[in-house]
Length: 423
Image (cartoon, rainbow, N blue to C red; front, side, top):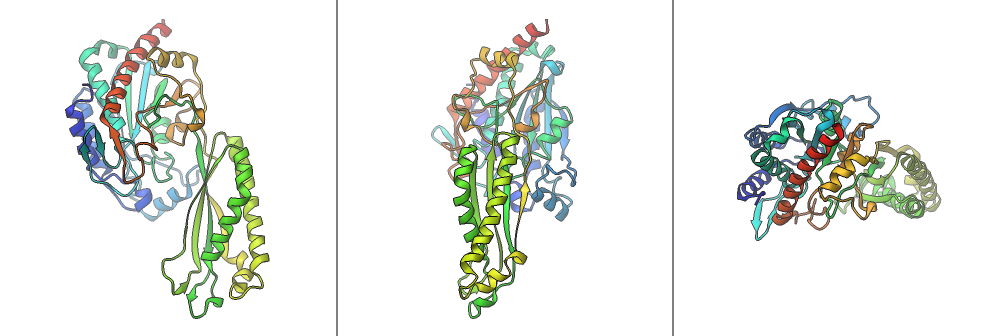
């Protein structure tokens, strides 16, 4: 076994550490502690710690999601809560460097870690600590059985934060790639099941917001009814957008409506979020146009329906002053790349492109698209079947073992094929 009992124990230990993203909680978790644990295991194999610390952003950068900017402004330690690490071994040039990327941050809530039969349960089991440890197990096997190949090739592991919670990798993977910590082949270790994707989607988020006045239930006519307004606009937009987004092959998610919890008052403020997942920059621009048009139509329809209805007429009158919309993130790049030489490396390792390209999803790989490199998304398990982001998140040990062996085979294939290419 390459993913031995030692690695099962390591996985359980890593899963027991709370690494929930501050993007969701606005507070620190124990990401640094988890990174230190992984760094210790990696350096014990002879890997060198090349980078350790937080990334950076420019607040004026239009690609940085508004939520990231707001959290950075609210707490100067926000980026320091989410450090990254880069570990490397071997002496190869950029043209002979193979990089693996996995993220240590997880979604909330933190879950207890335990093993049951052939599965390990816990937050991050499949997304993304388990697969990250499988890469380390494969590298350990390389150092034990084929240390000579590291004389003229290089292996890098990026351990990143800022993947979950809508951060979109802007202060993690993007930062590390811009610093040059990548290779000619870059593997983003995410659960893809049967094969790899060399394309990904990217998401854009639209917020509808109410900033009006509330009241008690004794005087509902005096309030701006945020619950009614946001729900109506969300419903109208969903109906309008269904057909054009289906034609563009764009996924739409209505994330929820947030106003209040109690029955005896009218809430005047609140918001809802729409998320749209697109496959090209051109499609993203089209999405923005149809979404903004749909919002304008929904506002007009609300005024038409409720302007003369008690107790909502005052809400209708003040609608343009109290209701607003904005993009929280948009115009982010997508991954869509090909490279015949690196595809041959993967084929030689018996690793194949996923048969259903439409199942590609949003991840940090978009930041590693470069003219002189090939970036793919490939890892064990399935986001859906393994319960990622749910209370049932788990990973099968046999899948981690299979992936460890596949990574081991890929490293050897990469060494042999790139040696032939360089000749």
